[in-house]
Length: 137
Image (tube, rainbow, N blue to C red; front, side, top):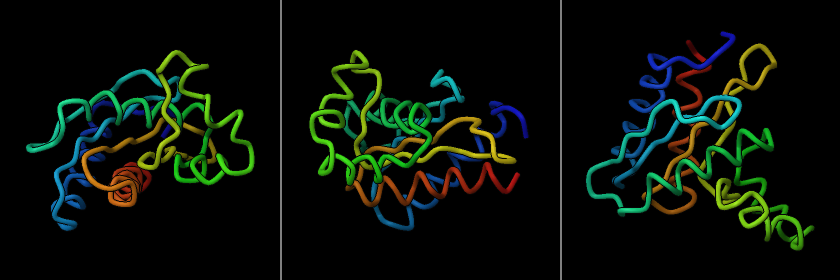
């Protein structure tokens, strides 16, 4: 797969939402392409009013840095001056907070899935489920 399509993003949203139901938490799921442009955002029932923005910013961070935001949160300890200021540096467009993963296809970044509405770990698990649905075709 060379690019992220709306159809593929819909699969990711469904998989992430299914994982959220399994975890018993409301979830907003956002899928962006490799450049961080919005492909699809689905605000889950019962999520906070700001979850579309935070899930998208998490997805943008995962796409921009080609790594899970969970890793970025851990990196904050080793380089707090950089990772603690990424959001400000990038004008609020990227949020290196737990809950997003990049989507890699044939070794190439094609986008990212970001989630918000649960705990950081729940968001991460849902994002992983969404990315896995894309990777599996």
